[in-house]
Amino acid sequence: MKALFALDLIGTAVFAYSGSVAARRQGFHILGIFYIAFLTAVGGGTIRHLLLQSPDLFWMQSGAYAVVVTAVVLASYVVKIRTDTVGFYLLDSLSLAVFISVGVLATVSQNFPLFVAFGMGALTGIGGGLIRDAITSQHPQALSDPAYPLMIASGTIGSVTALHFGLQPWVLSCALVLLVTLISLVSRRKVPAVVPERVAQSQTATVASVNRPSPASFSRSPVSSTIKALCILIPAAAAGLYLFSSDHGTAVAKPASPSTAVTDSKQFDEL
Image (cartoon, rainbow, N blue to C red; front, side, top):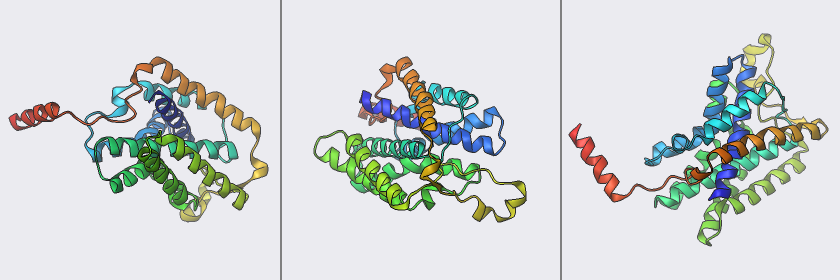
């Protein structure tokens, strides 16, 4: 579980950075940037928890998520990382795979059917990005990138298959999603921007067309940007893991015990 928690925090850092970039390009102030970064990072998991009626909301049970998002937002003012590079696209895909496996594992642990696990895995993976794109008026990457359906399918199928054979779901999910991502990049020879470039105000009349992420060629994938991403996002996740190492079980909600459910029911009846 600790390995999954560490990967979950890395995914939180990656998603938070993409959210902070999208918010800054819309001219949001620092509080707005933090809100968008936080919603991007935990939005999918939060919706999953609410739909499954899980007893504990993971980011309320552990301060690691708030620490990671805060560190990433502050670091984004100092270090600029391009989101149209191979390195960042791979990090985004890895985060998607981890979030999918967390969603599948959380659903299965509460004894829901497999078809629900598939849906909750996909929602956990893309929910935060959809919230980010909706609030910042971006063309939704998860609904326009042709590789995303294959990534989501491979991640969910890999997670469910791994659980069936008693393996860690994130291992197979990450392997399959990264394989699909690499095949997609090689076949297209283009790198879709995770967060599209901000367009000029005079072009806002054609929002539907100009907000679509413009692919970047492999030549626009500097190694320095990937190194900067690793130097910012990994330490941010490590800080959250170090400060809240005892919270490694919060990434996946535990089913409520019968006694807890009875107590909650009585309290509700009294109201």
